[in-house]
Length: 267
Length: 241
Image (tube, rainbow over all chains, first blue to last red; front, top):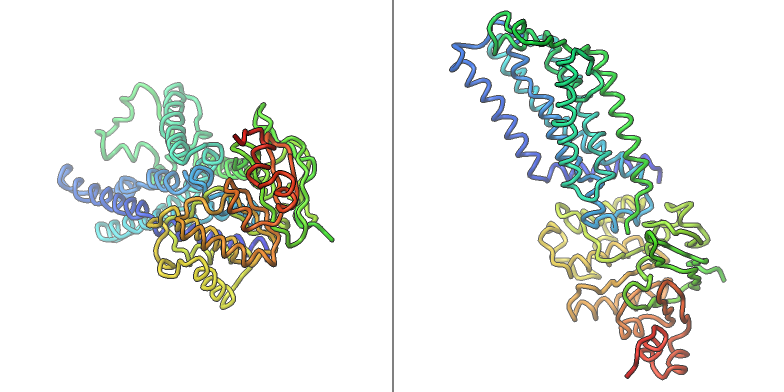
């Protein structure tokens, strides 16, 4: 039996795991609530939807948060869980390479996160069609960047899962890394006028800024020219550099997680 | 005759603690060998190295002549194992779990379905075969562990305290199962239960502090020490009085 066939088997059963977990449906429900909140509160609080479809599309884009939460909650226990909950005693005594197991788990987590992202973007598309009768082509770019971002966050989560003793530890470390450490450094670099495209949090911003940059996004929440009142300049991230950054995180995180998993012992 | 299980000068350090100290053991084909020893003697460490779960610090372990550390997939294809008390994915049923593990071992279609039914029947989990494992007791999981070890009808069984968590009826049923299948298989069986080992195995290896103290036929040990219990206590430094 080839490793490719084993990979298909592992991916299939790991995806079944995600489908049967309550967390998938909780995140889907929260996505719906978040999008509905934007759709209901905007006209109530701001006397109608924005005239510019790009602003509305950007405001509805919750892709980065969705990708982060989905990736972290689906992948946090992927490797660490096998050691912590002792399922590894059952799984690792089978004639399957650790590389195949990790890759199968990664692909299954990807599929589950893609399901979430497709659901989120379906709501965006239906909403834009209903309100403006149109879907901007930038939505497709945003969707593509969101998939890439999800892949990179998954890789980072897999890396932390491969070095963590427990699933909860891996999940928390990944969230702190992405939302606190990366976010704080991103903020400091932005204030200092330094580039921060190499940070995953900054790269994730490109999912929304693809609709027209920070100035356009701020239209909805600041007075005209409000960006000029800030004591520092916020530069819209370069899409190409952001994509490159995400690819690097994706590849490096994934390769490291495989190498560490292969070395890890189930004592 | 080729020996399916060969352990050569196996040593294992956990940081500075020496768990295995140049352990050597050879298990002949169709022999059922009990691995006895007090807590921390190195029994589980030995079996984990044989199953590729941990690496030895020095020495080598072979399954059917295949070095486990160098070619783990080939070595593991010949064994069925229960290590410690394995856990299973709670969101799967026993049928799905066995189907997953069977397919990973290249089993397919009707043959796999038929074999799953056989082993589920064997471990008496038929009524629970489509119930999610999250509802299972420890004993039921242990029965499933036996089923997954036998699923692919491996020629070698490596069992670490396999009756742990089973109720008295389960222990008896387990013993009957292993006695039955063990006639045609090579079994290395770690346990604290001398009675259980004596009923299932014809040979025992007694280890302590990672060293092999005795490896002999049970009848020979009983002749030499009067009983297996006395042999165990004397060899591992315990007092019979």
